[in-house]
Image 1 (tube, rainbow, N blue to C red):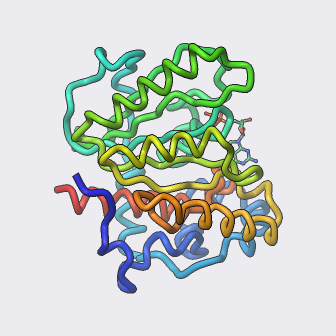
Image 2 (cartoon, rainbow, N blue to C red):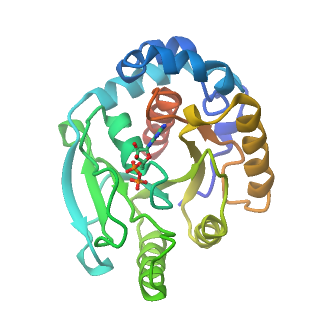
Length: 262
Ligand code: GDP
């Protein structure tokens, strides 16, 4: 399994270097829902090149289809059989992971938002349209301030085992709260990912809540930290589930990934 994709970083690719693209975003129904917030966050997110318009359109189409819940696994023993291409989302509790999955798929309640801390820690699998073999995996949130050590240990174990032994897992997106940046517990997860054979990328969330200059600094800080993690994509995605910012780019990135894996 590949750790990174050199083609991704060619000038032609230009995909995830573009964290924000107004034209693509305008075509995004979620973005159209919140034009005011869009305008507010627009400048703050225009930090890099434009994404590939063709991939953005393919991504829009892929995620416009019906996404459905297919499986929930509280343990490594109960995972669904490996199949197709899986993309997992990890992040601290309350980072906005459920909101991001819902925004990506255009479903208001596919992933459950605002989970109660301490709820059952499960890997949740969603399948894309037409049984085409593309799945999203909602990993259990980590880092509850009040979580008992045993719970943290059990999450770490589940995640570690999942990351180590899942050939169908093509990428992990590690969500980081754009308001707070990387925390110690996030770095632990990056270390775990470094030891796995799966490529991973950081996605900043809730960008609509952060002022432009602060966001720029946050991106720079995260990139500096990622330099110590060679298995990570050096570029990061900046998103807001509320405005739809970054969604076209994230969808496009997954289309690219599917292309590479098929
Ligand atoms: P999870 O625990 O990681 O699944 O996080 P949720 O998706 O449940 O989100 C946690 C809280 O953050 C909720 O109150 C969401 O409404 C809020 N939230 C999530 N994404 C965004 C975003 O992009 N912008 C803003 N302003 N709030 C968000």
